[in-house]
Image (cartoon, rainbow, N blue to C red; front, side, top):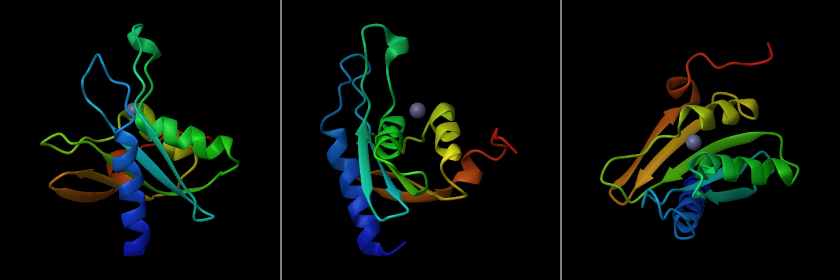
Length: 129
Ligand SMILES: [Zn+2]
């Protein structure tokens, strides 16, 4: 991925975290996905008084992309301001794997970023094949 695109992806994830609705966890998360046509879709975590109705930032970003017509995701970035990097949960990785090959998954915070592959984080994906 070009540095310019990576910067845009990280900026989108960081900005999305500012819109987080997380009064219960106090843990704002921002995510952004890059799609095959070069578009970037962002999302943030949206919590609910009925905890199970909460949605992760990553799935918000993925669902936004898919509902706008994207069917191929080329990269995912996740941002939190926490001291330690936060990784996508198992459910988000599974949803991501529906629309992505072995793509880079970037975890970022105020002190930097680290890149993993989807297969590192989800080595045995459940799929149609
Ligand atoms: Zn999740």
